[in-house]
Length: 306
Image (cartoon, rainbow, N blue to C red; front, side, top):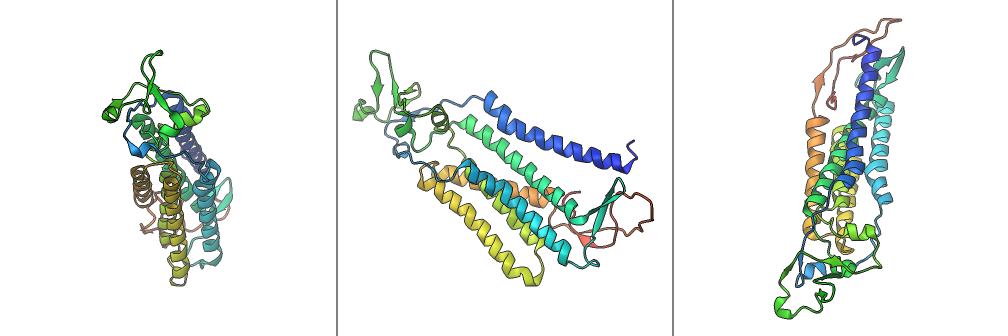
């Protein structure tokens, strides 16, 4: 069975799907239910926690479009254009055969590069979840949303009742008294570091910058490539500014998220996807009525880690 090309290809598809499913299930379902957020204290004199709460104009729908729909559409369009305009002598048109059907090159390329991208995005979500729960850093609007109080039931204290000389005292045993805030918002108030929006968006945009540099290498595409890369960078910076201007994260949270996204995208693009690695592929003839699994043709191109 293992020697059957169709079985090998199908097994590879199933393994890739299960691996992605496990990563996203752990990041989005298991960790939020199993991890406990660190109960971090505060100083009443900490001015960085006294910003007013503002409704962010970036939602999870916008984030999904920026990190999933946009990269997938970008990669699909680029591969379709390459399949349509790159000459047959420079680019292989068929790469795999499955159940007697030759799979076009752009389909296999889209599958591999999008798979690597989604795997890296899942790793980013894992790191973000673990870091947020393990640090428990308070957001800039902590006092406005939580309105903390502490002490015995008959002698409740708050920052407004605390004397100025004790304002720098560290308070770690407190409870939130703002009943108008939802439970979701009270949970988010302790998940400031790092910025998840910035980390995932910077990962997506940085990965697209690498991808455009590797795939849109023709001289006549230089201006288009630079424009697309600049747009990706501007989108990442726009998300950074939004998280700071709406007081959703501290400046250090945004910087940490940006660094995480850029470093992870660089690792996935260079060392996992091998976007810039050129290999020599041996030419083989395709006999009639024979199923062939593997590469055909003799050319230089990136293999994206496969």
